Each structure stands twice: as structure tokens, then as C-alpha cells.
Image 1: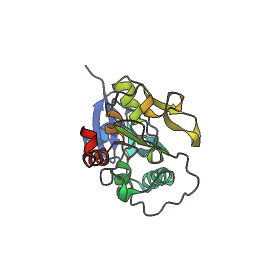
Image 2: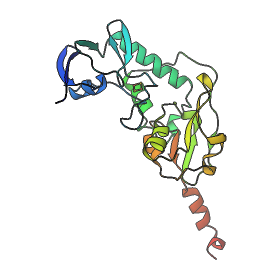
Image 3: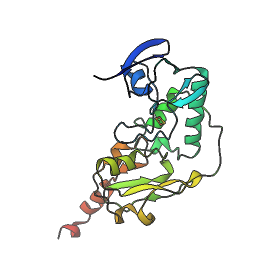
Image 4: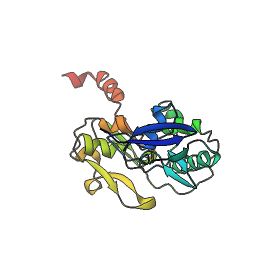
Length: 225
Ligand code: FES
């Protein structure tokens, strides 16, 4: 028999199975908490911090916070909203914001969370940590300037597909998602499964659009000789 835990979220008393996270408990009763890095079973690194909630005087990421007996949680106070907005502004400050031409526009989770949090200005400006687009793969385009370092692609590649073609390298501002020896993705063990694209919350990983190559080939009859 599973042990139960009683807690209160936004004044709602509930009982959940021991081991349930605060995020899951909240969502079970219809309380929405934004997430970016969390993808259950794929990536549970708790790295983005956009899911913070207030527990007493502290702000804690709800996606990995396990429900404890008599916990009292607030998910939508000014302190929580301000913290989430700051997190999103920091992510956007190091993000290529060419949203109008990005093929994830309108399906981008960062864009959606920004809208929900009413982010209208970005207070933080400065150097960009990542540059360059990797076109080396037959099927995947990696745009590191849009990467928010959530780790979901790494989780999909390593934990689900067990291919381990990509991983984190370096620390702090230099942190990036890369391949062994920093080689282009097309020269690695990547099997072109596309799971990393499905896991990516933004436009950092997209399917290669070969339309242009096809039209070029069609307009050149010598290609069919
Ligand atoms: Fe919880 Fe990213 S969703 S830390």
C-alpha cells in the first residue's frame, strides 16, 4: 500500500502518494505551473527554475520538490511571478530572438511562458554565450543561439534512445550542448531519430528543410540522367 502525504497548495488541501512532486500534485488539481526543462522520464534536471513555488520563506523548483507532510505551498504570489519573470528574462537575454522567422514561432515553449508571464522588456543585455548553426546533419539543424540549455535533447538522446550523441560541456556562461570533441553533429554517432527535436522546447533543434535542394534538383534535369 502506497504511503500518503497531506499538503496544501494555494489553500487547497490534498492527499497524494509519497514521492509525488509538488508540480504533479498541483497539476492534478488544475493548478498550472510553467515548466521549460522538465519532461517526465526524459529530463528531470531542474535546471531552468521557471517552475519555482513559495514554500515558507524559500523559492524552490516544484518539478523535483517531493511533497512532504503538512507542506504549505503558494504557486502564484508576486514573489513567485517576479522570480519566474526574472528567469525568463535571463534566458531571453542569451537567446536569438528572431521569433518572426523561427519555425517554432507559436509552438515555442519559451515564447509561450514569456507571454503568460507578461514579459514586455528584457532588463539584461550583454554578451551572447553561443554562436553558430550546425547544418552538418542530413536531418537535423542545431541552432545553438536559440538553445536554453534545458537538457531535454540530451535526455532524449541518452536516457531514451541511448545513443549519447550530445551532452553538456563547460561550465557557467560557457556551458553548451555539444558532441564528443565538439564535432559537427553529422560526424557523430547521431542516428537521425529526431527525438531531440521533439524534446526541444524552442527552435534550437529543427528538422532540416530540404525543399530548396529538391527544387534545385528538379530544375536541373542532368540530376536525373
Ligand atoms: Fe522545474 Fe525547469 S521546470 S526547474
